Length: 243
Length: 243
DNA sequence: CCCCGATTACTCGTAGACGAGTATACGGCC
DNA sequence: GGCCGTATACTCGTCTACGAGTAATCGGGG
Image 1 (spheres, protein in one colour):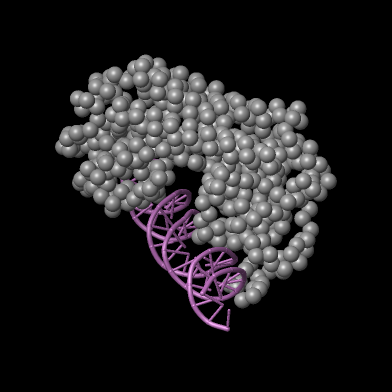
Image 2 (image 1 turned 45 degrees about the vertical axis):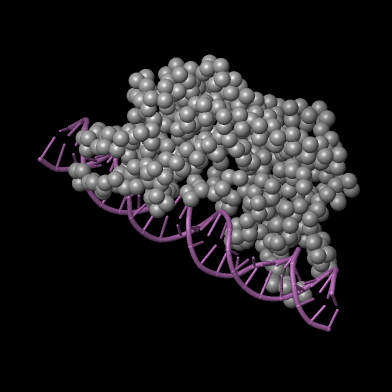
């Protein structure tokens, strides 16, 4: 699922959406995007914008309407959405809405290498995250309430979604903090011992080598320990999916 | 905040983490990543891997240990983590954990252009999403339970996080579905009317033009309507942040 | 003992992302 | 009416991402 699009950039989606109402030239598209707050999530990258528009044109999803200069400004090319472009926009939207995609949030990447930090530091950093999260959530809630007075809720659903998800994150972090402070989390003792003594706990030694040395190579075995690693190994991560 | 890293790719983080335990050559790094299930989130891209390793070397974060050929395989270069590389790994992890970053989930992008679809279709697609989400969640829960029998929970936190967030998403989607089916969502009637008649509801006309035509250009005004847009305008989106 | 498919280990070329730079025009102020 | 700051509207070149290809080696079957 999720066939790759001729133009796969999400900026392209925004561009297509901006052209539904009427033809525009690239700079105006950027202006509209900015006015609609799109630039908050993805600050507008000029290079990308023009590349994306050019690619959309190459694939027949938009077409140049006119290339007029008024005053004696640099030439502006106005683009309109083609039939195919509209179809692509609709189809893409359908897919984005209907098919949940595994993504890789940056925080998740951070969690997966959390083991390189000492448990106490991890605790401290998670507290910081929670604090910042609270602040952001308050600001977002306020902004949302403000907008809700101006426009119908239907215009605000992505913001509401974002808020809901981030609230869940905050809740989860709070839970993890609890388990870390009370010491209830299984494996915590070993993690701490390991960072204090520098020795990999025997229970974990086997886990760390998973997938290494597919063709058991004597040279590699010999070379091991040549560089004395003064730091405990990263916590191993493993897949979430079966098979 | 979130200064850009010398090597900003998350794959680089995985590479650094894989080198903490001991030096490895790129292909072995890939093997370890695969064994740890990293390839589920981000299928391993060979080109990127070698580029990333080369960049890490260029910036002094990893260093070649030896470049031996055994048997007469193509030459393998073994890399180790440098002092600087370890520092970068730790610092980067700190940042990823402590600083919540605004991201742009693909679903959110989809929601922001949901208006291009008719409300009834949107409803149907959201139901599909919820179904798929339920299936994925069940599979993930099962996999997690399976793993929990083999390794301590501390190795599973990213998976638990992912699960929590996706559960929140499912809940939110369920809520939205409710509001759409009962018709409780403000703006729904206009949205429906607009897709049925093709006419932009008067309450929304002004909103759609936000940010357009900064220098009120007579040519642009004239050109409007030249292309009769047979499709209702996209729902406008606006920022989540104040200021 | 030789062949064949799988595995190992990369290389290279292209397409895309992006930032810094450029050049013009408008409007307000003295 | 001339000057300056800001907004307009891009262009260009570099750096990055990535997939398709390549080539060697290993192990097992006939």
